Image: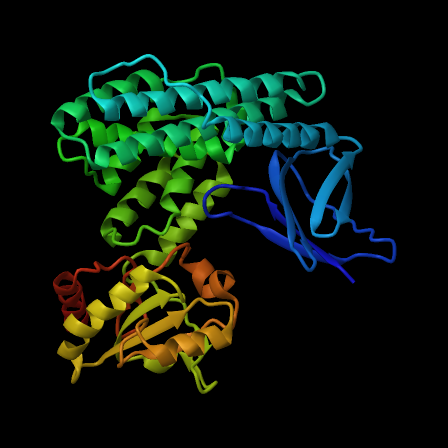
Length: 445
């Protein structure tokens, strides 16, 4: 019997606050039903657990009562929607079909008017213009559904299209900057502020519910700082301050929350704490303000660390409480993570040997879903040091409470916990010398 899973993302920003995963078995006739508490535009992902998994991502909103008829022919699926609210899903299908058409036409498009004597700049301008033209065609499809969907959904989908285009253009600018000389950099800057940065005043507050648009606003500020500075680098505090300055209301709250709940590996804990403390004083949306305040209370220096209890390769449970009296350097990894291997090699070569006779425990926690994969990775080596205490999240991976507690969305992720079981640094540096300095401070505490 097939099962159907629905992932309901009420606050669908970067870290999926409050995501609920619901699974039901299909009846004899293949029928399934979900009832969701929707108070504003949200995101639902329908997943059919069949021989060939099938997924569909769609917006939903209050008042929807949508029937989904999923048809299967061999390994192919298609969905037909009906009922109140179904037209927006049909609109999204039409937009997806248009995107596929635009992708197939990309190769055949002719070059545009030259804007520079530099071929690299012309290519960048070419791609930016193509992105703009694609957005215009997608907006035309959306306009054809103007009288069939709600005003707020039209605004969300419009923001989605513009956000998708903006994200693509920001990525193009980023990659162009990687190899740009000073003259090219000035031309890229001109293109960015004339063709990418321009603010869209026609969007309403409903644009805040578009994840694409929120991500674009974040990336736009990144490029803005990179292009206005001489080095192209910026601190977390600089980017946070610009986000807080550029945006207002619900849009500002969602952009800032999305930014501050990212992994931020390599960012100093003091920087993240500073940004979180600033954010909770200006955010006006309770769910986001409370979420950031909760995160602040979990990663601030001196607060109790999450007291995990996880199995090792032999199945015996190890808790943080059992390591009391030792400074704990904890790292999280998963099989296939090249950066995790690099970190493990760095720890093995430059850090572990300095603490052979010191009360420092190296704890390596794997976020794999498959236990056998974890054990094979341990056997092959490379993901943890020879001195590490290896633990497993029992197949829950990033859904394990410890990963959710620290908002771990990427690896490697490091923590330093002091002898009393409190956070010493929730974002320690990866540089071996700087990391050793932090460990030594924790030992002297």
